[in-house]
Image 1: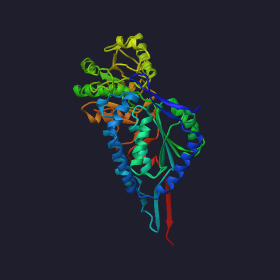
Image 2: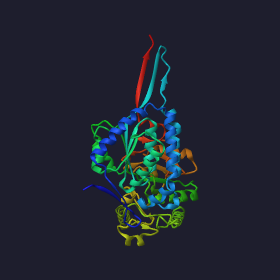
Image 3: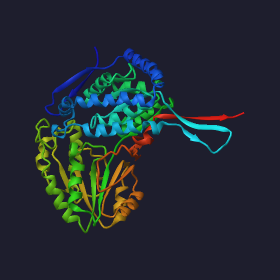
Length: 460
């Protein structure tokens, strides 16, 4: 009997699509095609590679009208947000534009009589294991620069969003990319780990859970493949007394509840200076009331279902524990108590929280946020660092020097001031602690997708 993967839609619990898992022979053939294709691709000038990838971006954006409702059916994001078109184009075009400069040799001129430089060469075959929460953006972060750097790419997409992998493959074919250079495979977990450990993969980029990252590291052990891991997060915000509260409230509500809170860098905990705490909480709760739950296919819906009922139940469990320990719920909790195991979970704001509650320390990845009063910058920094994760942290203040100073003390990959929940392709996207290792985007992303090679030529 042939194994298949089913996409169970969070909209109605029915099977939306079903795909056959690749056989062992198909996986071996894909690896061979990638090895063959990358040999020729490495001889193609970077500017020419860019033309292929620009056509790919054009082709993928042209499919957006079909992609948007597919995303709603696969993982619940409301159609009103238009998919991932704008940030996808921003990231992909930026990485294409900087490729030539990022990949050019670093020439050393300080020794007469020698020609010396450091070149950047492709690693070989890059495997991208993409998640469901931003199925295009997270994949593109690595796929585009990997190809621009001269590598071949094999994509294994999350089971919840298999159609995203197919759409990317269609766009690559439409762009005329050489056969075998990019391939999309439907793989089981066991076959994914087997391929990672096969020795035929030179770099693995994985976005997912901490436990998933550990399994990837274990599977790759001994192969000497390089790894890029973006794992869990518990991103904090700190609102100082000089913050512009209206701006802070509007953006932090969005940062907490957009995509049903299923954002790698979404806001999961907020620390507010005592001087502005009451005003901030009042405004935040009032603004959050406008984030209403509904069918993601309805153009008026702002918050759709979470991707799976079991994920929503994790948020329910954290919230229930917090309430049992004395937290106060301000919005929808009585309604949501009756919806156990449903992916439909309305936003919730919790106050009177502390770090003995899992909702303030463990990843929620859903539409709940705790707001905690702090006395000063020092207490805020201590609490922001009281987490096993470190992807982003945001500081809300009119004093950018203070934001930079505070940010230097926070254990995180990115420090924001007066914004959140954004990936800047000009800066490296990275994390610390259990959030993972490596980095994508920017020129650093290219460094992680290439192998340095030194040339030391003496004149005689």
